[in-house]
Each structure stands twice: as structure tokens, then as C-alpha cells.
Image 1 (cartoon, helix red, strand yellow):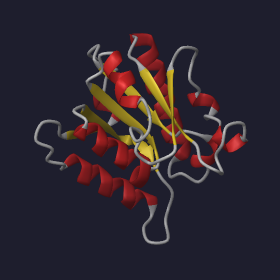
Image 2: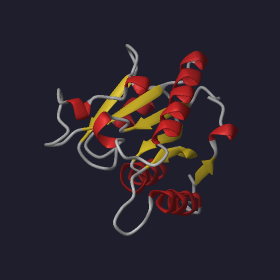
Image 3: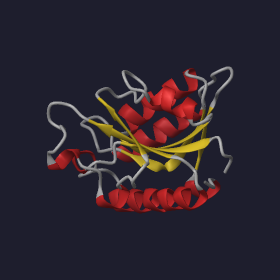
Image 4: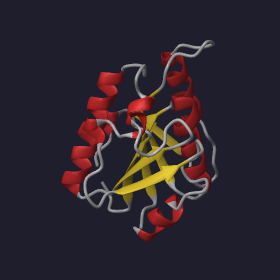
Length: 174
């Protein structure tokens, strides 16, 4: 992968993935991607949500054991769905020369969606890993439909300079 690419791992924390659709497969896939990025020297950015329930120190706030940042890897804490809002994410990416984000994580319809859209608006090229994000069933839709809908919708975003590509993991090298 180009040196201007970073892998973004959104909110893969104990309290966020308990009932996530295809949880084990997603965690294994993301752990594989993290290992590949580390081996290739591709920067990894771990996004960590916090709020009144998921606050530093409580078990739910911790990253999953398989997706724990290594020493020196960037961790951005956020309090909103959009990982750019009120955080130094843009500045950190720019300082590292990152222009392309490969996006993974949880929750599809919230933090993954908001961050993909904002990244494109901020001028980043975005690749959403089609089988690298997940969510839970809601009262109105099952998780599989939410994921499929967002893959299609985000893949059709017609941002004039930075469209969002949606690709399966098998087509992405880090």
C-alpha cells in the first residue's frame, strides 16, 4: 500500500462489540489487517469512543484484546460519532502525510458512516472495507441489512474530489 495510507480502526472496544453481527469473523479480519499494516509499516489509527458510560478505566472502554494498539500507535479518543469532531485526527493524519484512509470498525450506521463522510469532506481518499465493519440488529432493521445498505450508500457518494470506495478485504493490501 502507498506510504500515504493509514488503517483506521473505529471503536473496537469491549462495550461496543458484544452483540455485533459476525463479531468473531470481523475481529479476526481486523486483527489480520492490523498485523499486515504493522508488518508493512502502514500507520494504524485506533479510534476510542468515550462517554459517561464508556469512560477510561471501565472494562467496556477497553480495546478488544485482539485489537489493542501497540506502543507508539496513534489512539484518538472521541465523544461523538464523527472521529474528526473535536479531536486532533485531521492534524495527526496530515502530520503523518496520510491522504488515504482504509476504514474499519463498529458501528456501521453511526461512527463508521459519520467518519467516512467527514473524511471525504476533509479531503481524504476513503476506502471502506465492505466486510470490515459491523453493527447490531436494531428494532427496525437487522444488522446484515444495515451493513449492506451502508456499503451501497457510501459507495455511491458522489463527493466531487474524494468519492468513497467500498471494497472487500480480499481486494485491499496494506
